[in-house]
Image 1 (cartoon, rainbow, N blue to C red):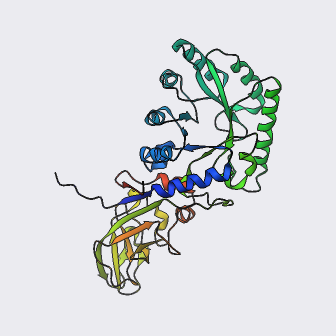
Image 2 (cartoon, one colour):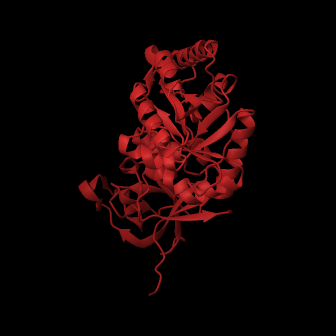
Image 3 (cartoon, rainbow, N blue to C red):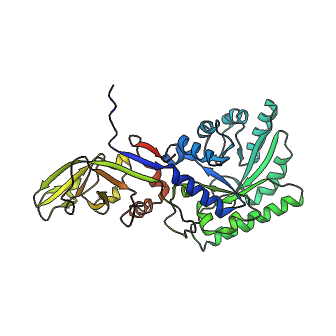
Length: 374
């Protein structure tokens, strides 16, 4: 059967990925780097990215749930679930030596019972809710719960961690309070002889905005989106990282339309003069935000071509007013590129009123992932 090339593809530069990792590692040293690869590495394809990072020296990987953990087990190093664990998931995860979160005393007891049953040591990290309000042991209960869990058989209480909700805000008093409270908890536990070899609270935002979050007593950081060369739209960018993504498609049609022609659903654009337009083979099903309608642009032969009308599911219309040389089949850069005209993930996030994580996770499953510079 003849192989038909995809009309939309995402180029992922693994060389830049590794360069970003090394910059992060250098910035946070001597703290260790835990690479967060949840949600299929934010939709970019977990195995190629994980293998590249593993070859570069990463030995700790973080995921959200067991299915994601299983995929990474063949790699060297440890795989850690950072969110929660359901009762029926504990047995296979203990068997697979996945590092598990303890979010309450009950989860600690379940992991303990299963580890004893299997004749193993279940490696756990205590997840502390210092202000995220989502998962974890509340600060008011943390000392008591950890003391009780620490005495349970079959547990290797290796680590303790927490998470920031607003580390993108360089003036965040909450973030500063979280660090203070977490350190105070560590001191209280240490007085009773309870210590941890892994202590982490910094995410990508904190690496850029709160150096105290990767300095002693902390010795591990977690980073996901910074590996991709992206940042939150707010906050400081202490790291100098390079985007690893380029979303591309092709020019499907070129048309000369008369003045008065309405473009796309709802005719949100009506041409004021005779205009040459192009139709590209990508739409919101491929990850283009609707917010680009009548606002964004695409790059064709290095020339910015404004979006005309509402973006459709499969196609987008652009102006070719400044590109008389355009031809059907021309490569189109929807996201990425080089130089001043490059289109950044953060720009799409601002237009959409969201953050870069959502943009990166939104590329559709018909978008081919192509890996370069491995």
